[in-house]
Length: 248
Length: 273
Image 1 (cartoon, one colour):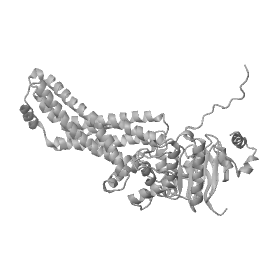
Image 2 (tube, chains in turn green, blue):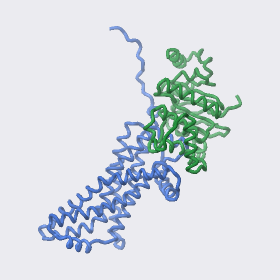
Image 3 (cartoon, rainbow over the protein chains, first blue to last red):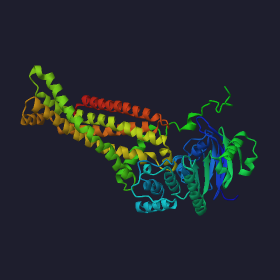
Image 4 (cartoon, one colour):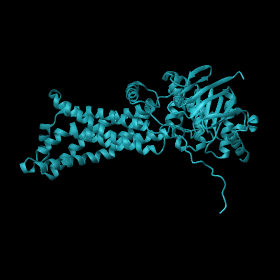
């Protein structure tokens, strides 16, 4: 496992009122890591800490070979850390005041020396990579949920990050749209080799090609391993989550 | 009655911050300094989509306010004329109402009236939009991409307000005077030439400049208060209404407080008046 691209150690936070405790997780280049847990188990808070959207009490995040403290880093360092991650939030979180294409070109205009024309061309290329052909003035609300999620994916990959974070990536999508999105994600991952970290309560991700599955409950990682080892877990939350998968 | 089994929930609640992010994203100092910095940057940058954002905000905050500012300003002119004329009736000095319009419009009625109309229409809109963006995760998405919300969301709104409010103030000045002219010529039986003569005798260009200066201050205040309330509230849908209410309330108070301060300064430093 030499392709370690993300390592989180001893993460506890948020600082003012901790909700997640002693989180340690890893992700590998080209591999998929799943953080699985029931609602309110703290998965999304862990993701917010990776993006420095919350101030942690303790912990460190090593991404793409550079170590960052999970608290107290300067704004410039935080910005640098954030560019190592692409992120697809639950519900896509596209900027409603911008057009779809502007949403995708935004990180390029901010973080690269691309001209407006180059950024627009790159944005259209990214949208095409995720299977979308979008007209120039289309705004996010004109798209259905599945297409919005794809736009969010294109935006997340704009800077070719080494790690892609997805929070409940197929939440609210029908089964067909969800499996199509998973398939697109798989193709893109294979092509670009980025690490994928999925924060989800859907146990089906644990049964896919996940390299490692971390199970969270009440703010802590209660078990970790591949799906074969988790099937034998004695922890009630793990058993409950995996049993639910069995009935799906 | 048969049992339906064990309860499926213990009734315990998740901490609020698990459900939605809370707390301030930016301190007020950082918001104000960031807005000034990015406003300066915007004045020289040609990068899209921030500039297209300003155009949209101008349409929304400026052009969109015309439907309110035009009729309201004419009505203020009419009301002021009748109110002043009726007070001066017993002294036979109704014509002074024309001078009063000339004295007060550019310095007070226009800038304060336009600012309060913009507060009524746009402060709630700005705060509501930002609060719903916070609740929908859009602000977090921006920050997660390493983008500054002040640059992409606040500065375009501030820039649009700084252009729109002075423009609306000049328009409002003109329409209040129009309302005054309508009142004095149609109902008080003075001629247009008499109106113009009296108006010119009392009007000072300095008042227009002071009024425009105040409108710039008011624009920054409205933008600052509304964006602060929208951006830094609790990130949940139920908090959107609270943010809009606070934005309107504090904007009105801040505009009136700033106007009072300017008036006090001008009163005690006669050379400025």
